[in-house]
Structures are given as structure tokens and as C-alpha cells.
Image (cartoon, one colour):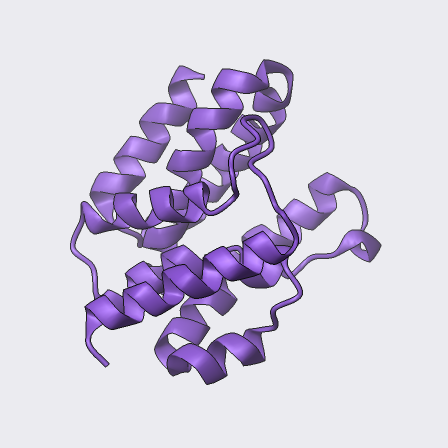
Length: 171
């Protein structure tokens, strides 16, 4: 399958998955799909492969909706499925408080491929825009988590790493 049709299918799948639960962006109330689209557009600005755009569009589907990683693998294949798996938090409420959960997720992300780390950097960049702007009190918590994540994302795209680090220092 060519990259354009893979991307179209991923966009439609992600929009349907997030839409099925009426998921909205936390601070703006916009349909959630605006975030995965923004992440994909950030990935598009650096060297990438087609599966990375599809995975960027799908990066929150398993974490936030009833869709399973098996469904992603079946629908989009191993390469996209593995990227989405790397981008999906492994922690759950039973794993403790936010700090403990985020540490488990960080350990998972540290083992990710450079392609997955590039998508994660794009995710951080987009999330920073809204968090710093709309929730200054949570920004302090998020900024600490982001700085820790940046330490394990150095194998991702260097341009996006610098953008994410700069955004963290400005908030």
C-alpha cells in the first residue's frame, strides 16, 4: 500500500476511534483528532517514512479509546503497529500515582526505536503548546515530566529534539 492511502486510512481510523467516544481536546474542546493531525504535520517537517505519519495519526488510539494494539496490527501491519505500541503508555491506574506511572512510561519510551522517539517528540511539541498556554499550574508538573522524557528521546530527530527542549525551557 502506498504512503498516501496508508495515511488516509490511518486518519479515517483515528478520527472514527476518537469520535466514537466523543473525545475532545482538554483545554479547547476541539475534536481530539486535531492533536494527532498536528503531531503528523510536525513529523512531516523532518525526514520520515510513511508508516511514521500513520503512527502519528494513530498514536493515542490504543491509549485513549477501546481500540486494541491487535486491531492496529491487523489493520495497518507490523511497522505501524509496533510504532503505535511504542507510543502507547504501559502504565495504568493500578501502578500508583502519576509520578510512578509516568516513570514506568518513561522506561518503556527509553527502549523505543528512533522513529517512535521522533513521533513522541512531535507529540511533546504539540502538547506543550496547549498545556503551557491553558494550564500554567499543571505546566509545572508537565514540564518536569517532559524534561525527563527529553533525556530518553535523544535518538529521535535532532531538529524536533531541539524544538521540544526549547519549548520546555520557555514555559
